Structures are given as structure tokens and as C-alpha cells.
Image (spheres, one colour):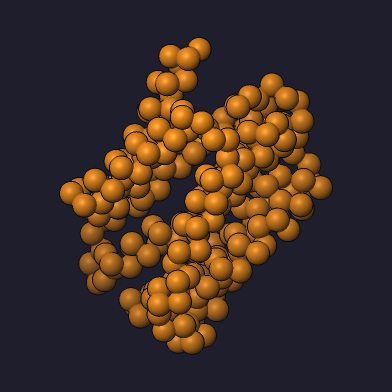
Length: 236
């Protein structure tokens, strides 16, 4: 993977629009999750405006669902902060992997693209970068598509959430996981990548079984990231 290709650093309106259209199909499933969140948040006692504003400003589905378990008359601030940080800590590593391409942009474009960073647009952008193409349009345009869908779904959940009684029973909770798995399978196949993903998966499973809730996300990301960084340095 290299960042020397000048085309990989391009970010223009056409690329953003193409990136937006590319992630619209996945965004349809994000709307369903947003509906489920809107319904769950209503049942937890949040008012309509708080739910929509939270989804608009936070844009972190797993973290927002986790906060509902801690919501009540007396919100435990410290556990809330720790929980949200643990779930979203993977963004530190995701941002680090994007740095070789984002560093060439102006601060406005750089942080604008990072603002809409999520698992789906990060994965597909990195796949484009690995082939020497610009994934910045996918990163920003795709992120905007996902953000709009999440916000729209949260709003719809306030009124139509009862139509989806159990998204898990329909297998909708597996959509994002299957998408990310497809991105991995479609990547370059080598012993190097196989070992990194194996270590990350095993570490995440061990943390899921034996460590506190949501820690498996951080442990898996760190284990794979550290091995990838050390192995790369050794090869160089």
C-alpha cells in the first residue's frame, strides 16, 4: 500500500458525489438501524428533539445504543464517558491508517472527511487506496450518505419504530458485519494479512469472553494494528 500516487490524494465534488451514490445501498440498511434506535431511545425516556440531535451530532450507532442502558433520572457521567470511548476507540486506529492520504489535504477538507468517518466508508476507502485509487470521495461522500440515513432513520423511529419489533430476528444486525467481511475477502491475499486478521479476531474473541463489555472492539483493533505496524517495520 502506498500514498505516493498523486491521484490517491484527490478530493473533488465529482468524487464526493460518486462516493455518496456508491454507499446509498448500504445506507438503506442504516436507516433500519436508525429506526430501531429511535424506538429504543423513546422507550428509554428521551424526548424527540434529543434523539434527533444526538444522532445528528454524535453519529455513532453502537455508542448511542450503549448509552441507552445508562440513561435514567441520574446519568452516571464517568461510566458513560468510558463506555463511549471504549466503543469508539477504534477510530483512533482508523484515522491513523488514513493519515498518509488525509495529510495532503487542507485542514478544512481533512477534518471534514474525518468527521463522517465510520466503519463502512473507511473499509471501502481503504480498499480503493490499496489499488492506487482515490478513496477520499468515498470517505466523505459515503460518510455523508451514511450520516443522513442514520439521522433519517432515527427520526422515522419516533413514529414508525413499532413496525420493526425485532431487527435481530430478521438478520439485519449482520448486514454491516457481512459487508466488512466482504471487504476483507476482496483485499490482497497474503500470509501477512492473514496473520494480522487472525490475531485481531482471536484477541477480540478472548476479550469478548473474559473482559468487560465492549472491550473486545478496542482489544481486537489494537492487537491487529500493533502486529501490522511491527511486521511492516521489520520488513522495511
